[in-house]
Length: 331
Image 1 (cartoon, rainbow, N blue to C red):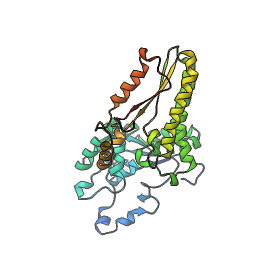
Image 2 (cartoon, rainbow, N blue to C red):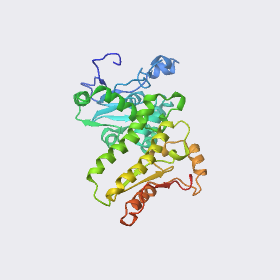
Image 3 (cartoon, helix red, strand yellow):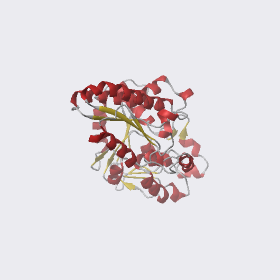
Image 4 (cartoon, helix red, strand yellow):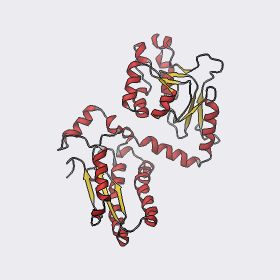
């Protein structure tokens, strides 16, 4: 698929026609695993089923009509988009067989649906119904029984209406957005660096451009930077640089917008208890908390309150400033 220039999107599905209790995929052959031949189920480039760890630039949609459990669920989690029928379900049943899910499910499922829901599914081995998976964010589109492939084809056609190079580059940035996917400076390519700069800095710049024509006198603009812009974190040259550039952009915009009475300021959050932080190992989180004088992670409301302060009617003489919301981590 990657080598075929005429193929822009891939679809993985299973033939469940006529099955009373359809199964998309129930994972690996347990007989092969018990006989010591589990390695035969993997490939060097793709891992389990030749797919779950396969590097690619083109998006893959999985069309599920039935149960996707164990390795079958891990195949689903290795795809970019999931279309499922209402009779489908997703689970990691390995614990019921005295096994451990080893094809990415243990860290991909929490990313897809959140730690609490994933923890329950993983520790009980019970499947998640399609409708709940849809509401949790694992499933992109729901379809009636038997219609998963048609819906996946419609979704693929919609993707193919867009420019392929833009689709592939955007997919790469989305996948790299998670904390665990940061690369160290020596491994980072120029393209990877520029992609993050375009999203973080380019997004703020484009927003400011549009805001300039619609903001009323005495308007308020608040950009969001990060403590990383001031401290620098190992392996985050792209992220820290983009957030530092937000500060410089704020100061330039503050001077230019002042002519119309609009203030432009910036909030730089520290470690805030979001899903990304929750997914970090406990010992890593504890190390950060120990360096925060107030002794706790920030909350979303802490950041919101700082933004609201800068937007208030009686803060019109504050512009070009950065408010640090980090519990004293950086002073």
